[in-house]
Image (cartoon, rainbow, N blue to C red; front, side, top):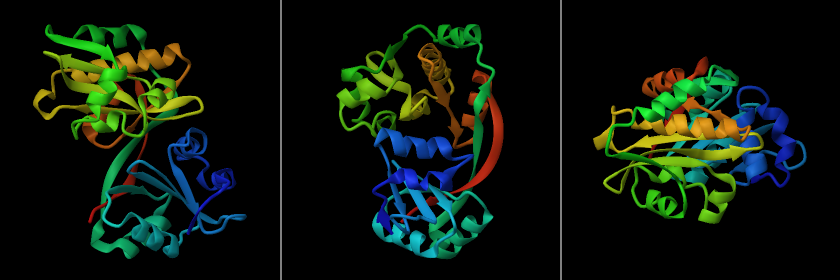
Length: 253
């Protein structure tokens, strides 16, 4: 396995359901693409943050190389079909924990600006919604629950140029946020997190509604991929259309 010097050569291997994720690796410079061959790749893996997508022909050697490279690092691994999934389970054994994720449609939606604004206006007194500017960018990185909101942008300047996000503050402390986990040519992937002590109060809903409205104003698509049924229900409430469920794997040490 080697880092693909011209990642665009692997683009046909990621056509369809995972094309936006690959585009983020291709256009944003935030991720890396590894393949079995530099000039004519048949098997490849795109890695961005702690998320990885496989493409092309199933390759045991590629999976073994990824295991060696990542060591004990946490990774969510997604294969495009049952052949890859069976190979993941064979290669990783008990390290690979299967679970179900939920894809939302990337092309159509039912966003209603009035509904989204109502979600924002429903914030209870004492909670303040603010854009992620330089101070909040650095504060998000401090705590483990909020760092993924901005962690893939190595500097605030990078985030200011390509990122977009909002936080809810309570008494000056960040308690919830929604931000662009990564970006691609015509959209972003939404990351939403809330402090464990402030969940189920509509904070994530307000943050996401504000972020979606901002994306629509900028002609960006706010892509959403749900890790849990809770995330799925929130997405549907905000106007997304369900596409399909799929199997992913958590790789742990």
